[in-house]
Amino acid sequence: ISVVALGFIWSRLLNDDPIKLVPSLTVGLIVWQFLSGCIAESPSILYRNSHLIRNMPLPYFIFPMQLITRQFIYLIHNAIVIIAVVVYFDLPITKNQLLIIPGLLLVIGNLTWIILLISILGAKYRDLEQIIATTLPLFFFLSPVLYRIDQVKFAQEAIWLNPFSYFISLIRDPILNTTPPLFVYLTSVASFVVGSLIAIYYFGKYRQKIVFWL
Image (cartoon, rainbow, N blue to C red; front, side, top):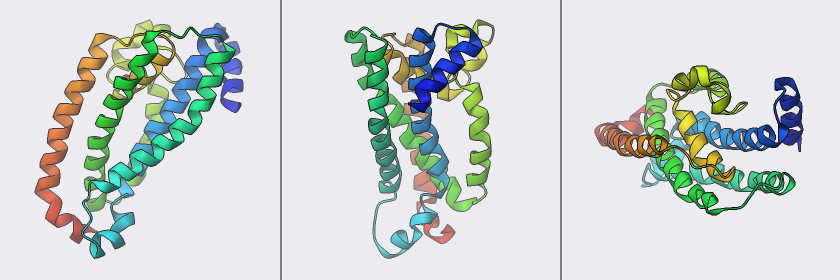
């Protein structure tokens, strides 16, 4: 309810149509909560589970998946607000909404290698958690959460330099009955492939050392 109320207030301040801005802002904030929740906890998930890692032969990969699963459950709970907004503003239900499935899969796939890579770095460099905590608010304002990309035509190229913009577009656009641009899918797929290879390489390289860092 507070998110929707914020949307109406924000639409007044921007002198924008609340029918367009409120659903976009609501979905954007909920998606951002999912993304930022995953990233913010990433540096600490290994050393916070160090007692399990030292005493049980658990695969390291299980901890990033636990984090994503927990945050995804929060996302599903918050989806009730999204459904209420869609019904209240009478947004059309079309086949475009089915694109949320590949969009979510791409986002989760990219978050998996990002979390794995950050968790490895966070196990060695404990200050990484504070660094990410201080930079996430900056990315929040640089991401198309409080505004739509079509509202800032003068800075669209800069917005697409932010990886969060792709993740938000993959989830929000289908919900709002808009098809994400093709380059968003292509960039996300390329990011998943390249990022996964990098994360797997560093994991294989430092796997035996992680337990000593903890």
